[in-house]
Image (cartoon, rainbow, N blue to C red; front, side, top):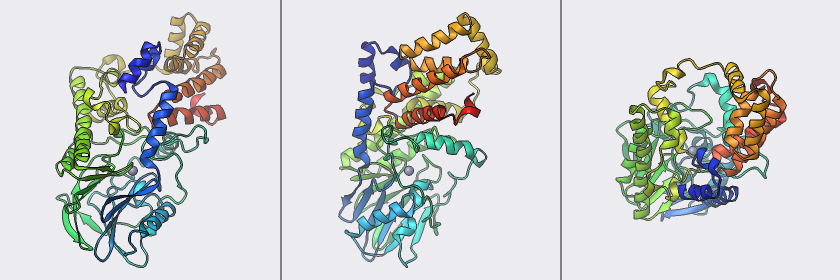
Length: 454
Ligand SMILES: [Zn+2]
């Protein structure tokens, strides 16, 4: 992707490069996001003679493993409505009763539809010891997390603004969220579990990553590996801008390396299309693990060299041999965001520079910036000029200063911010960034943010 950015740079869009590595020319961004859409087109993929994966029935995947006298369901989508559609589609391959349900981890899009798969039978439900540890933390900030969630996933965007969510379609049926959830009945211990269900040999391996309570599933006979959300076709979301606690990046890399050791013939991700073929599946896992590890190592080296998160977010890149891998393009996760998360996860908010121990309060800083510019009028002109030059990030930063000034034109600053956000969004192929920019612009325009922004 860097090649694309460099090409556009030569055409004079210098601002693009200064501003993050997931921004390209608008037509290209849209083309890339539309192409990614194939990764979650609805359908059933037969990944082995007795293993079927339903893609695109909601945001995540659900799989059915057919045994002698029953089936095993791995992950159950977000709510019973979408799950019932997947269950119905599965029935053309097997009508056998559900003997077991497996939750790869506790995120809502994998557990909320379980009831739709079971009839009168009471299947065993497998999850790890730590199941649920990812949810329910930091509840105190739920009100703002909800707002940020809506923005990251673009839940309120209009159809023309919608593209997708990077590893999931833009539109999913969410109103019955969690209504089909059935609690786990069998706990997988830290050492993992090897067993036979409905005549199917199945192994559960602990694999913390996106969540601490994650595991992956190995079918030794079929050589199919079900990865949960530690793998999907996109650079992984090592940090979610909706706001999450630190995700243990190092464990994530190690868990994926552990998966690669199985040399699976098919890799079934938690989202996006399965990867078929031993060579392709194993290479994808190795590359994925290496990519995460490299971002972690580069960040740690930079931290120990005394560099700040702002510096490192612009410096750390994927190794060149991994940049063009289709499953590492930053449609969902983002390298600069991962860098900042690793920094904060290891050291907290403080970057070690005494200048930032007690920075000026925003209003005072805005006044000093205006003075530096030669007055509020001059600062406002600079803001307008940045927008005209499509230097959108700089326009945003100046608009944020103008909004604090008593003699600043707040209405104009808000208008500039809205236009700049839409300008940035158009260039983004990182779906969370794009959705966030657009959603925030709409909120500003509607006046809903008045208590926050002005
Ligand atoms: Zn998921």
